Amino acid sequence: MNTLSTQQGVIRTALGRMFVSPMAGIVNILVIGIALSLPAGMYVLLKNAQGLVAQLSGSPQISLFLAMDATPYSEEQIRRQLNDHQNIKSVEFISRTDALNTLSEETGLTDVIAGLDKNPLPDAFVISPRTSNAKQLDELRNELQKIQGVELAQLDSAWAYKLEAFVEFAHIAVLVLASLLSLGLIAITFNTIRLQIVTQRDEIQVAKLIGATDAFIRRPFLYFGAIQGLLGGIAAWLIILSSLQLLKQPLANLSQLYASNFALEPLSAGDSASLLLFSLYLGWLGAWLSVARHLSLIESR
Amino acid sequence: MITFDQVSKRYPGGIDVLKNVSFELAKGEMAYLSGHSGAGKSTLLKLIAAIERPNSGTVLVNNQNVSKLKSDALPYLRRNFGLIFQDHKLLFDRNVFDNVLLPLQICGFEYKESAKRVRAALDKVGLLGREKSNPIALSGGEQQRLCIARAIVNRPSILLADEPTGNLDAEYAEEIMNIFNSFHQVGVTLLISTHDAALLRETNLRIIELKQGAIQPHSRYAADLHETEDA
Image (cartoon, rainbow over all chains, first blue to last red; front, side, top):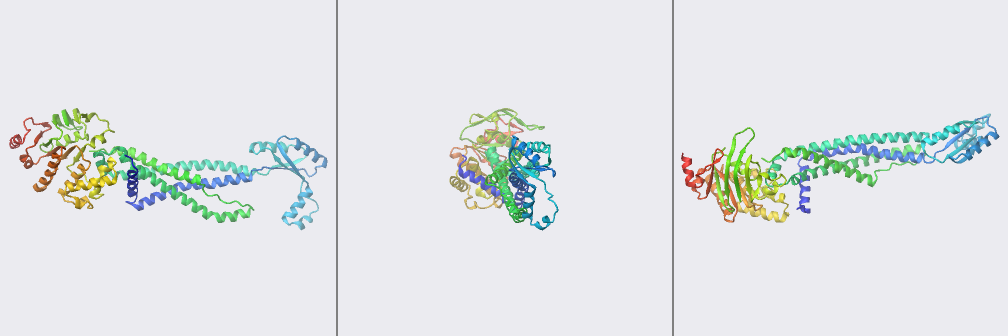
């Protein structure tokens, strides 16, 4: 009974109803598209931010600046302590003279530095810890800070961890937003289908009188909801794509200023498919709820 | 084919529309259902198609108890019937062809086979040339014939017609009765409700007369009807 040709007929019916009032249909699709593109677009940005954080905090380092009056003896003692520490992978010593040379080479401030009557930089150890867990890193830093002769222990990627925490927070915010807007999408479809059922009232009544099953009557409405949801999803996808295209150049300029080659990743194929399937499902669900609610009100007389 | 046994129907808050109605319609029989408007003719037809349910008594169609049927079995019961409505119930958002196509779509027929059947049905009622027209452009008689085409396209075994000649002049009415007679000849069971006295006077068919919701025991034949009409 559910042959391919009848399925095609149902899809034709559903599309036909969409084009009865094309303007209203387009507005609906646009509203759904915008509602979906907000959380989906934010999700794309967040995913990029996460990638950036991972890149930056991938190899955390702790810088250990020694007191200015540290003697070679205390430096040697500290080095031994660090080498023996089980949470430390490797230790690199940067003497104050090396540091000053590097600074003058990299910044081109040779004249200024030559003019200094004494070296303002301290001796330093750069430590690569074994862990990359934010809490353990913080504990390690506190421990190193207590070593005698250490002026300052600084976790280099601390800001990256703060960003990571923020990204996590934003993730939940996006989820809340997505849930709310999904409900909105269901409501839009619910209402569209309700209006359709009202206008199709005669057809539904006659069809019931001449032996139509509920499934037969329900089907075009469900297809309509699903197709409208899918088209809304496609609209959202296009909105995100064009927005990212707009952001691309300014972001490249910005990232160049920070000597990074960070580029925005667009929606992956998997994410695109999820977006389209999700919008299709939401449209179908809205239609289903509406049909379940309103169809029983039209009883054959 | 159709059996009513002690059937009563009362609408909520209203009077009894049908009171202890019992009758039997044999397979292939054609009969009139007569009576003044408000006598319960439409309600009786609705009970057969399970559009309404009786308050008491049983309605049997093909030995199936219609009043006990579950709602998801109703569509399949109704496919046995061709229903011809007093108000036609045509759909004005589609052309004549698509109106007749609807029952076949509901039953899931292939389009090619459906198109053949639709044209055959339209030919039968003399509307083959109007298949592209909107039903709103048809005259009252043509609309009635379109309604008949839709009722017969599914080749039902039972035709139920509610006042099919109600608003038509004698010439159109005769045309429609000729169509019904041709179905009777090929073995379709027909029950036709009417209050058209001229039609009833001429017929040799059985007449079931309803008066205030009850069947008049002595009015099985046309001759009897004249007496009650005159009274």
